[in-house]
Length: 316
Image (tube, rainbow, N blue to C red; front, side, top):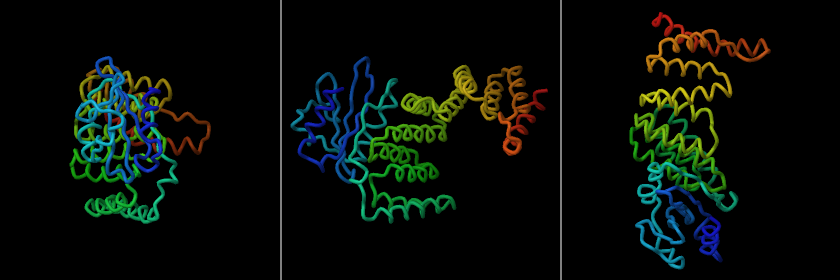
């Protein structure tokens, strides 16, 4: 890994504007550790892209290149996303090795406030279900601040609503490599977004892969594990779904987790377990001694308890 970083530093030496920063993804390809190197240009319209394997550099077409000739690996961002980023779904082991950009101040734009205005206008239009207006404003925001991953994530939500799944995925991936500061959580968010897009469009296998990558790279965040369990359940993999939910319950009891577990038992035709779990939902008490807080939580839990009661009525 150190030799990869030394290589990148040699490419950047004496050149502070082109490329800007770098990202390294790693994965296991049939037992061989492979590193993909992303070197963005200012504006993020293009990237220098290389793959490093066993001491040898390759371009995106798998041709061997010399480090001194790295500039011939320049590729438009759109092509890079389409040709390369999504391939990570094909690997069982994926890891974020290194991510480094210049300080955020190096990316400040004189039109940053205008970009935020466009983002807010886009959000308001999105909430009003005016997706064309939202799209136009998100595009204006991206034109002003192309290094901000949140803008691509926002625009991807419009593509989701339009059922333009390929374009939604492209924007999610572009947001991941547009990150201007060292924060690998951005990559976790990217895979969370990808998982949600795949799940919404019933591609549960791809969704599970994305949730798993997010979990492995940012700890077992409960929402990712819970959503993965729902995907497992949709695929009929009930043992895996039950395992995920039970692990979460072992760490923190939650009425929503018990309800999800009950529904999984029901789908798996485990009627006895489903009845017991829905009864746990109906009898669930918030873990607090604060009476006012307990009442507030009880009120919030009422819709879930009502749904559990309906299930019990049908099962009895």
